[in-house]
Length: 134
Image (cartoon, rainbow, N blue to C red):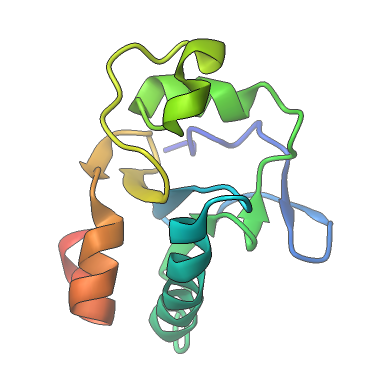
């Protein structure tokens, strides 16, 4: 099966273009100006390191693989999953917001939602949350 983001140019932390390889992808919606996002980021960093320590199981879109800031896919994903900051709803075109920021949405390689509220499960269950998403 082709990954739904196969044609997307994601960049890793070093700035190199890379394609997602895991069957499960975590889309991380956040902003550097958001205090809740800054509080959640270390927890997500720790989670990512632990779940991928032995075998690469989960790609997270964020500081690891990121969509370039000016890429139109950023807003397309916000509309598709109805997740964005409240102040950007009108600009992005989200009318019925499911989640604000920070939000982690777990999706399959075809883009189907597995969990729209993964951030709370990462905080409460840590690496144990992964089993439900694979």
